[in-house]
View 1 (cartoon, rainbow, N blue to C red):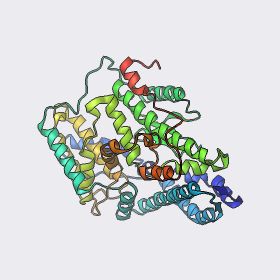
View 2: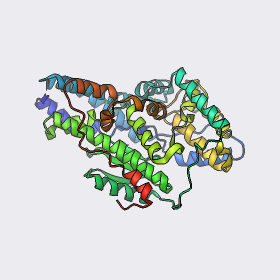
View 3: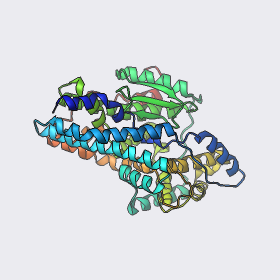
View 4: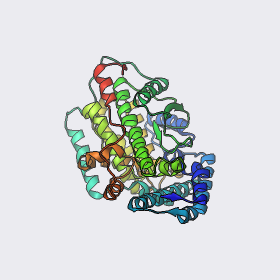
Length: 419
C-alpha cells in the first residue's frame, strides 16, 4: 500500500482525530462519584432512584468536530491510496471499517449532546452487538445455578497477603511489568477522568497507555489478574497487532496513524473474551464471567429504568452467596452493574430501551474463545474474521513478536512482585 502526498497529509495531520476517540470516556459522566454516593445513601434506606448523569461537553464537542473532519477528508484518503497486492486490499478494507467505527463514535457524541437516547442505543448495538434469546436463556440458567448451589463461584480463597493496593501501587506494578515486556514507550498512569482501568490504544501520543482511576483499590489476587488482563492480554495484543501491520507496510513511519487505527477494532468480542480467560486462569472459578451484566443489558433493552433494573439485579444478587456480605457492598455491586449498562444515557427513566452493551462482550467472548485458533489470540485487538482475511491473503500469524510470559500467574504463585 502506498500513500500519495495528500493521503499522507491526512494520515499525519489528522491522526489526533483517529486516536483518542474512546467510547468509554465519552459515556463516563462527570458527576459519577457524587451520583453514586447519593444513590447508595438512599438505597440503604430502601429507596432506589433514577440518577441524573452529566457528560463532559468538552469531550462531546471535540469528538463531534473530529467526526466532521474525518468525514471531510476520508474520501481524499481513499482516492489517494495505491493498492499493490491482495494484502493491501485487505488493509484498505480494514481501514475503511475503522473510519466507519470512528465516525460512529463521533455520531454517538452528537446524540449524547442532544439527549437522543434512542439513536445512541442503536449505535451502541451496532458497535458492540447485544445478547440474543439463546444467550439470555443461558445467562438465566447460570444465574439460577448460582442461586441454588453452594459452589464457591463468587468468593475466592483467602490469601496470606491481605494488603490493599491503591492506584499508585497498581501503576507501579503495571509499569514494572510493561518494562519487563519491553513495551516502551507505553506506560501506565493515574487518571482522574476514568472510572475503570482503561487501555487506551488510540492515545494521542500514538502509543497505548493504561489509565488507573484515582480511587481504585484492589487486593493481591485482583492485582495479579489485572496484570494478566490489562497488560498480558489487552496491551500485548494491541502491540502485536501493530507490529504485524507495520511489517506488512515495510515499517514505514508515515503509516503510523493508519497502523494504530487498524490495529484496534471496536468489536471487542475476541479482545475481552481472551482477557476473561486470563482472569479465570489466574483467579480460578471466582473469576468466571457472571451473567448479571448481560441480564441487566437485556432488562434495560426492554425499556426498564435505571431504578427498575437496579431492583432486578439487587433481587438476583440477594439470592446468591453475596447475601452473606453486608448490604452496602451488595448495593455497591448493584450500582456498578446497573451504571455500566446505563452510562451514556440522558434520561435514566429509559423509555427508549437504551443500553450501553459493551459488557455483554465479556460473557459472550469468554464463551466463544475456546473455538478460536490459538495463533489468533496474540492479535486479539482485531477480530477473528479480520485475522482470517489477513491469513487468507498470505499473512503468517504464527510468530507473534511478544508471547505471553504469564507474569500475572507467576506473581500470584510466588506471592511477591519479584519478576
